[in-house]
Image (tube, rainbow, N blue to C red; front, side, top):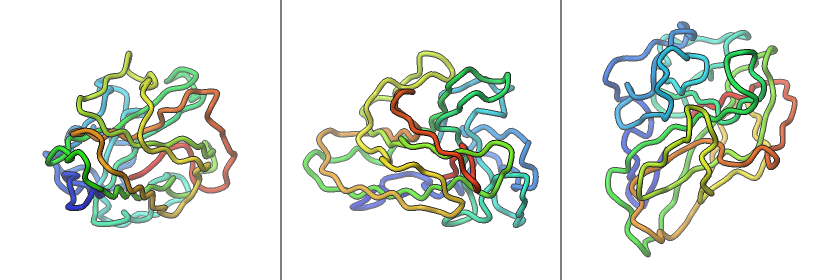
Amino acid sequence: MRLSAQNLVYNGSFELYKERPPSVDYALQYFPLHKCLGWDDFCKDTSDYLGTPTYYYNQPFYESNTWTHPKSPYNGEGFIRLWPYVLKIDVFRSQSDRDYAFGKLINPLEVGKKYKLSLAHTNGQFNPIKIFGHNGFGILLSTTQPKQKNQYSRLEIIPQFRTPYLFQDSTWRIMEFEFVADSAYRYITMGNFWENYEIEVMNATDGDFRNYL
């Protein structure tokens, strides 16, 4: 992930960490996002490895038709996973839940200055169990850190950038936006901000509702 003129996203390739995360062959090992330097999530239920955003190190290389991790990061050796929109996931979560990842920019944006935001995301490898794509993945820039009402509720904020397309892809896709800053934004938050009725769901044949960044 990059936010330029100069790159203002700290640790945008998710390679710096407080503690080295597991490699992808230990997929079920819960590793909270706050151990990735510069990033955090809103869910603090440390027992819930099934939903809370996590991050991984892509060494050694691992490919599987069971796990859904990408075959390799888009850039570097680290990546994070979040569930932007969860629909009826067994008994662990409610009807519709949201995960968000957020970070603090290196410097606030300068009002009136033009910037370009780019982000690579993917659904990962094929998983025959839970497979669907959805639209509405978005990026919010804010002057204060947003907060969820409860652990998995939708952030009731309209983000500056949202993907209008149904996203379901096992390869990396690049989101790019150019904009002029209208405020001195300090925080960046990623996830799905759309209301349930706005979200379209698509059955998929490769990838699933997880997003990897």
